[in-house]
Length: 221
Length: 221
DNA sequence: ACATCATTCAAGTTATTTATTGAATGTTAG
DNA sequence: CTAACATTCAATAAATAACTTGAATGATGT
Image 1 (cartoon, chains in turn purple, cyan, blue, green):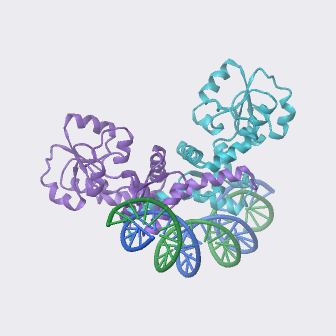
Image 2 (spheres, chains in turn cyan, purple, red, orange):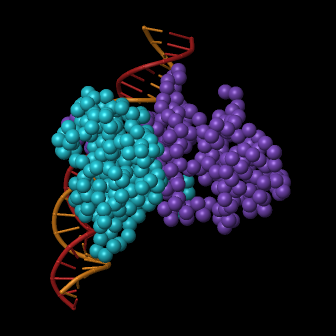
Image 3 (cartoon, rainbow over the protein chains, first blue to last red):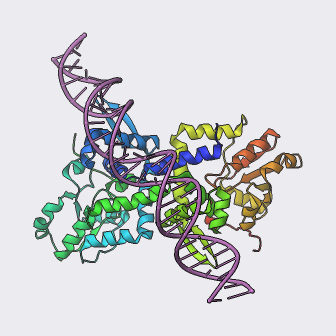
């Protein structure tokens, strides 16, 4: 303990903050939150080189945000626990609350259409059992396969325009995607509303839904 | 919006993480959590130069963690809201849970004496009304003056040895300091226990106590 | 044992961040 | 208006972090 313990402690706490300070690592966290994955899959999804992704993942692990295990030839990364999700969401909440820039970006996604308040997960759960709602999962098919809300229909943003005309204008549509940092649901809701449909966004994404202990359907591996 | 909105958003969220990635800024946050203060006072307390502190404070402000207002010649900084405290504490929790290094540093503070579990704020509040407990505030006098738990006695670590012999071995002693990152209370409890006293640490510090909506006594300014 | 595959390590380059210094800004008091 | 003061800005040097490339490690299957 050559330096003061106080400074040493702050250094360790700052390590956690530093892990959250690079967009590349937030992207990785978002992906890992969809379900555990190996380095190559994560690198693919995020557009990072494998070596680069590996290094970022090690930083996340050192900070205690993710853990890894070896599965045959692959190393599988997953979130350590729910605290990582809470941290990720707090980052978003603080940013959205205080950074005018974020407001502008999110408003830009709606392109004129007014974005309605998101639906809470409690509300959706209640409505799910009544069957009075259409749920759209706007994530890529492979993430949908790893787990999705029961009854949700997987639609890519590209297909959305084509599918919009087939949807019932009377039934409310609720769209969700990856979670705090994902903008697919924002874009889907805006597109649907331009078609005159009654669409809203789910608060949070699949990781938060799962974390609530609600049912998640996964395709057999 | 020259780059993708997704990347722009992540950049903004990462800004919040980056603000939490430097020990100097965590120190500043800890100080600001004691009560609002001007740049010079914060620089003094943290040992930073004024210009340096000013720049760090602006980063914290850009990230939305603190806000500032002008009061005469001074610029006063304060925490934006309770979310900042939650973020700070989550950093500590994640670090303590996963970083063996933190464990070692904290254990080193106790120097052999086994550290008991901290007392919850609920427990302390209950015991306060019964008057069956001695509360020690081990922060510097000026921070004590800005606000402290009613009935607490302000004692510096230096005075502690001298005062230990005057304390009743039968009454439980509860020590607190600045909050998540402060180690004074750890050290005080260790010292008192070496004197055979029944001492424990309060969970969290003054900022958390205040945030709970509990009474705080401040000396007249 | 050998070849193969996924991941990590190591070294070098580029880009960011930090701390310091001195000047500039904005506010109050005389 | 001017002087005094607190803070911020600007420019620099030093320290850190990010990304790339190619080699090394570790596990699996033949």
